[in-house]
Image (cartoon, rainbow, N blue to C red):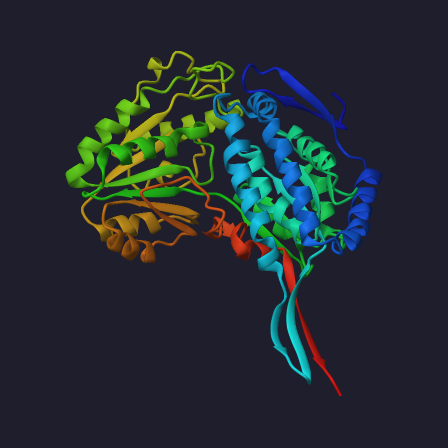
Length: 464
């Protein structure tokens, strides 16, 4: 491997799954230039024509979901029984919704049309959009921006994480199949230093980044004094609160899934749970028993429900965090030896449930991004709210109860971008996806997502 290439090391067996070349300086310059020129033409294309092309691209993805799913499993380790559904469910749902609402959302807002005046507002595309996408949900996170950006008349350059670069190539194939004009969608394989240089380029008009808090700070630093916008979807330490009136079986089933799906590698996965005292012992017992039913193994096997983490160092970090919690008094409820594939020093990590935890412990405050969850008893709604807000993150939170009025009252007091009742770890494309505090800023999805990818332009015409 030369210094101009990088390898995709599969977490399945530590093999080299693929190797790709890093873009040259000329390739970067040409890609940006092509994107800028293409945007001047693309923005004149009708929304109906844009929609036809985007729908055809989505159809391509869906019809190739099995192949794309297997490829994704090799790249980042999610069990193959789940990976095709990233395309056929979430990706498809979000893309189709954003296509569906585009015409109405982007239509001109007429203020006055009379004999003397014609006044209206129009939403203009920003120009060239740089999308920096992560590996954990490479299609779900990127589609949030790519489809609405193109539907709004922008052009896009996609840079995917070096763990999942083949996803960018699949986008290119789908858009080529759909007949998207050249230059409207492009991708680049880049180093971190190259990403900063592209962000600094005056021809780039907006940056959409999904990743870590340090990564978000690096994006902000690269933007510097430029007057462009950025969407930063960063970390999460998402809490759940189980009230005494919750449907116990339902809450357990959904919170186990919300904690451990994708090996806990989700920015909006459940990482800490607060349970009212009267329900605490029953909840923990049921939670542990269901967790033990996971099958940790090679993700290419159809029976596997828990695959490896993306890299060994990610598993090492989570195991170290657990170790520090134990030293501070926490108690583990899962014997990892019941998961035969679990092995320290590899990406294969057993799920873990922690009790006797508190907020002095890193595992209850800092993002773990692994199949690990801490559970604490609480005496009241007010105590739960205080603990849920005791975090530098605020992406999602969930309340498990049969009382919607109470859930709304609690939701009003939680510092979060999305508050759920009786569900978690889900993005509704009709609602704004956003975070507060160190979970970032900006919005994707919903009609508001189009506002972020366009700028208002006012027209004030007077007849004499």
